[in-house]
Amino acid sequence: MSRTRILAELRTSPPAVLPSLLLCDFGNLATEVQALEQAGARALHLDVMDGHFVPNLTYGMPIVEAVRRATELPLDVHLMIARPADYIDAFVDAGASMVTIHAEAVAEPAPVLERIRRRGAVASLAINPPTPLERIAPALPHCDMVLCMSVSPGWGAQKFDPVALEKLRTLKAQYGDGLLLEVDGGVNVDTIADCTAAGAQLLVVGSAIFRNRQQGYAESLSELTALGGEGGRDGFATGKLDPLK
Image (cartoon, rainbow, N blue to C red; front, side, top):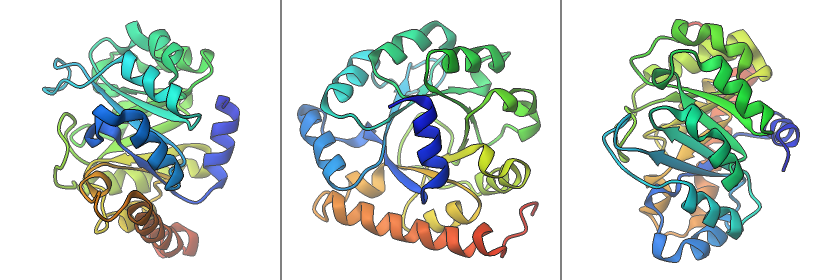
């Protein structure tokens, strides 16, 4: 799916829950991917960690390639790595549809974001909880999407940091539908409505899906999507939120 089509669909569709594959059963990766697709997932999120930029170590291009072979869904590849510019081509070639780099990992994000765009992928910039929005302001014209981290990157199952909501509200007020907004970390049944009310259109969910396997992926995704939809209707859509608070 082309960058233009992905952006058009995500900008005009209801908020989407993106399962993060970090907690999936990698021994049955294709089966897991197909189950998530059948359950209604509209895109999949892949966390790439190098053990340097973040303390954890996960996977790289071979897993992205394997997921791409199993599905045609958009793949949202989140690079929590040092020197991301060195790996843009490799991850796009592996099948990434959307590539996120961290503002904290590069001195000048704009050239890297433009390189992602030239490769035909959605260009996204992530910002950690302690990093102020002012830090990324010069790079925003080069972004298709901003990912507001609601936990410190590197480990799953952390507690949600509401500072992400403040950033989402500000970005939504400033850019409207011209900038996709994503949130990652601690998104679950208790926090998802607040995220969509603040302006998030893409909601990365890990533990709340994969640690409820007995409930079934379809039921978990349906519940989270419904709760996220309620937040969207009660927030900016109805004007109940002050976007600058």
